[in-house]
Amino acid sequence: MKEVRTRKGAGLMRKVQISRCLMRCSLRWVTLAGWLLLTSCSVLQPETQRRPVSVGRAGRWERMIIRDPRIIESSGIALSRWNDAVLWTHNDSGDIPRLFAMDTAGHLLAEYRVAGAQAVDWEDISAARSDGRGLLLIADTGDNRRERSEYQLYLVEEPQIPAGGIHTGRIAVLRCIRFVYPDGPHNCEAVALDPPENPRRVLLATKERRGCAVYLIDLAEKGTPVVARRIIGLQAISRVTGMDISADGSRLILLTYGDAYEFRRRSGESWRQALSRHPGLVRLPRRRQGEAICYGRDRHVLYLTSEGSPLVVWRVRRGLDR
Image (cartoon, rainbow, N blue to C red; front, side):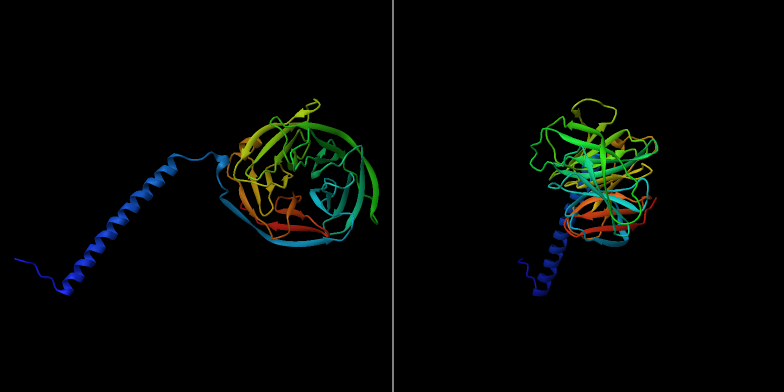
């Protein structure tokens, strides 16, 4: 007997068929999702490949503008170890070897010529205290074309700035560290003395289009040139333009053109161990190309500069979870 379906019955059957099809598709997607979840749990990338997970946003911030024709392209910034209200900066390539001091209210305080130094491509500055005196480390480490045969780090004693007016003076190089990398030339715009009290080493982060690498120079080494030692690669952080270590030595921050990445070091850890974990992503105010960063006296405060004239200095106060 031939089966006869009404239009209403046929429509009902089509609905049932569609429903069954959707259920089969859903089961396939659930199965696929479960397989992907198990795969992602069983085949994890190395720590250095992972993206940052914790996020800290810029809280209150203020912008200071220093209008002085001598500062045309700030490329590094460091907080004075003598005075919490004084910052040091310098120009990028093309300038004479000199440093500028400014206060945290945005006033230029001093200009110091650095005797015994060359300025091929100054990219960063770091401050520390050693044996009761302040030290500044100037990094002549820029190499956009990756063609330099060696690089220089200049250690100078931080001068105490006289009060009144804009002071000019000269400071001498205490030590010039000539160095090379074990794997050929690199462009580096980020250095830091470690620890900030009685430093024993210099950390350098390379600037690459994809990822970066962190190198170490032991200040006790006397070779000429010294060979920097590669300690870790960070594949998730690119185009690093600045670095600093907090005054208590517990945090290291890497700046990029946009935001920054902060690593926390536990007691007794090396920086290689700390850099192997997830960094915190620090959201920063929008600005022109970010070139320099340093901590304030406490790690809740960050100072930033950008390229161009007039010089813009950002002071960012942020909240920390611990």
